[in-house]
Length: 303
Ligand SMILES: [Fe+2]
Image (cartoon, rainbow, N blue to C red; front, side, top):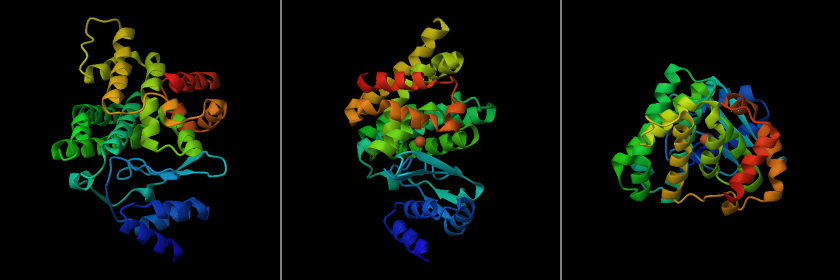
C-alpha cells in the first residue's frame, strides 16, 4: 500500500513513475515488482521528450521496457528490463510540453537524438530499427532548433514527440551505446541530468566512433545537410561530429564537462563505472578500452 500511495502522489505532480521506480528498486525483487508495475501503469502521458532526474530515470518511457536506477552508495546506474514495463498506451500531446524551458527542451531532445543515433550505429541495428532511427534523427534535426527557439511552436513540439517515440522504438530494438554508458557516472556521481550528460558527450563519442562505421556516419552527416558525395569517407563521416558540435552550440548546451562541473580527478573512477555498463558498450560500433574511455572524458573535459 505504501508503494501505491507514493505512486499516486507522483502522478499528481506529473512526474510519472518516479516514485514507483524508487520503491521497486528498493524492494529488490525486480521480476515481481515489474509485474506490479504493469498492473498500475495503464496509460502514460508524456510530459517531456525524455525524463531527467538525478536519482532515477526511465529513458523514452513510453515505448521501451527499460527503467534505470542510481545506486546511491556507489554512484553507478543500472537498468532493469522486462516486458511488463511496457505501458499499455502512450499519449503524446505537444501542449503538455509547451511549458518546458528551452534548456530542458534542448537536453531532452538531444537525449532523444542520442537514442536514435546510437541505435542507428549499434552493432545490433537491423533494417527495421534503422528505419525508425533515421526517421527520428531527421525529424529531430529539422525541429529541435525551432522547438528550442520558441516553445509555443506546436508543429516543432509535435514532431519532437513523434521523433522521441520513433527513437525509443529504435532503442528498444537495437539498444544504445557508449554515450549512454559514459553518461551514467555523470548522473550518479555529479547529479547531472541524464539528457544533459548525453548531450555534452554525444559529439565527443561520435568523433571517437567514426571509424567503427564510416558509411553510417556519412549518412548521418547528410541528414545534417552536408554534401558528402565527393568526399573521402573519413572526411564525410567526420561531418556528423561537426554537425553535433554545431547543434549543441545552437542549443546552448555547455561545450565541455568542465562547464557542467565534472571533477577531472574523478575521470579514472568514471571510466571504471562506465565500463560496468556492459550492454551499451557491447552495442557500440567501436569497442573502447579503459584508456579510450579515459581519453574521451579528458578530451570532453576541456574540449
Ligand atoms: Fe537516454
